[in-house]
Length: 306
Length: 93
Picture 1: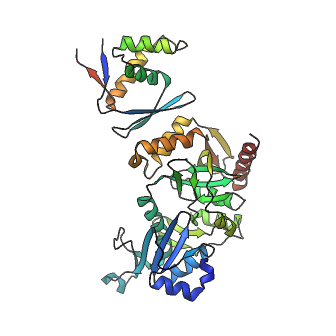
Picture 2 (picture 1 turned 120 degrees about the vertical axis):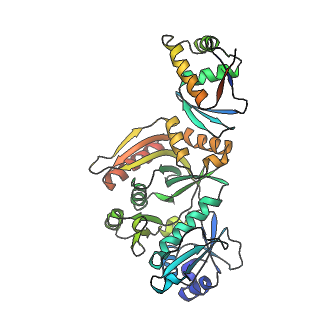
Picture 3 (picture 1 turned 45 degrees about the vertical axis):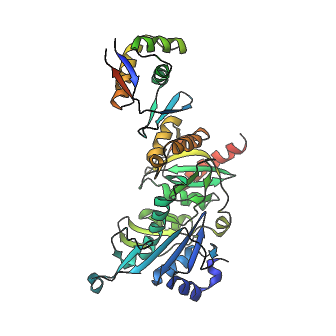
């Protein structure tokens, strides 16, 4: 059963008592909240995702509730907790939905250490994955969203989940986070896509989340083999240019973009080495999404005939 | 003549890509990329070489195409850097 099949009233009922368990990729998230913004955001972005029975095991438990401190009388707030632990300071209530998405990322990146986790977007075509590691502000999510809107399958916008034994990528397959100028860019580039309402004034600026196409959600259990490691960088007016980078340097850069490489020790090293050994590595600068997509399509085409 | 030995806590794991070597030290958790000469130097130390002369000879034996001119200086700088990272230690006479 998918979330949309539950219907609005059942979604709200389950959310209200912590009975809503959504499956996304290899994880299940139990979410509890009485906030309208949470119900609305989930109903939009996760409509096509499977839900589990209320009594099912969930990997992560998330609770989004309105702040109860004195502050609430002049500035309403939202608080996130997981298993009774409050890792973050309260945020303005209007930030509730993006905070849930960030909290889901936090749960994953602090606990899923049976994967090597890279701070990276991952998209796939013809079974081959392009790993796109980059720091915030590099245009990673915009590029990822552009590729997804042009036929590349989303595995993750934020975290590459690398299997320690096979070095394949498991899809986390959650909504793509966009911020600031990227929002208008993607609304124009993919007018058919669905977005949550824009939340202004967050620590990242204005943010929204772009829904994953339903056909891609259906394939979220398909792993992919890394074929390219591409470090993207948006540069105004720059032509789309792929510049080869050595595997050795790419491995170091990937390691420094990882959530848990050092934690995993030798197993992380071996998994990362396996990823890099199977990939062509590039720096990629771009300004126009159409040009960027064309470059990626050419890579995918060449890989098919290799 | 300086003599070098591995830090006893070091446990190196190697990955070779084209001309690059990436080394992971399980003891410290450090990962670093080194060129072929330094990789060869560390391997020669693992094989028992300790003086810079022994290491140089082993490198020239293993890598006959390496430019011998300046090798000693390159090696001295590289080994000093490895020592700063705590991977190797200078042995007292």
